[in-house]
Length: 91
Image (cartoon, rainbow, N blue to C red; front, side, top):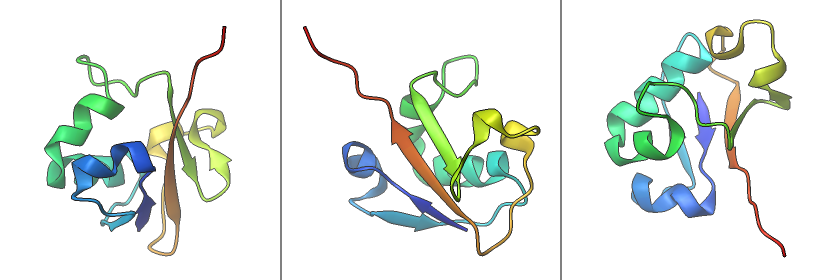
């Protein structure tokens, strides 16, 4: 499965725009990603092991927060995950 890495997090993947990992579920794929790129874990997960609230993960075009199985959603090799950190700001 291909995981698309946003520009702000590419420093933790050796500059890679995409990373290919195995994984039977979304959670498995993210575990493989953070296992291969350990510094990325702190940016995606809380110390308790939950996805950070400002990190959005999309399986193809679907936000996993709205899928019935969330991180336990099964995946296919042809699927793509996209990590999108929320951006806050303004006045």
